[in-house]
Image (tube, rainbow, N blue to C red; front, side, top):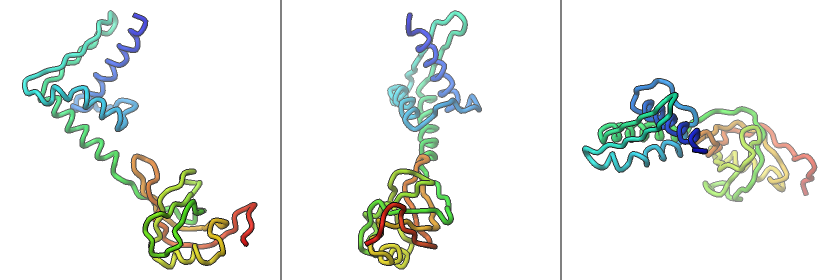
Length: 187
């Protein structure tokens, strides 16, 4: 009995999430993320696989009883909706940022290298993100116009590709200026 409120809240969430995925509710439930959707799909997986089966989930609550009944056809429809929705969440989003400050976290000393370069743009993310220069001259300017590229920052134009709202790739389009990092001296 001590966890009755938690069980009732969980059933309310399941009811609203499955109703929304079936198109019966227009308001998306709060906290719908890919992990939640995968869990919702896993709960009804046995029903979706067994034609003619059904899952029933209910709570006995004096003020607001909850009864969820999902058949095999509805389970398949829910899983299809989840697949569509998670596909939309995983699509990368691109945005252009002009004249932002970038500094190298790691860089390959090969202007033709397409792997191994990571940079930080603190106004976008404090974490290192894979970086690609759109042409060899950009990377050459960044790596070779100073004795040590790790003691400098760069004012650049770039696009940011995101996946699930997190930066996944910086495409460096242009370098405007090279600045010495504060507190460090180039050799």
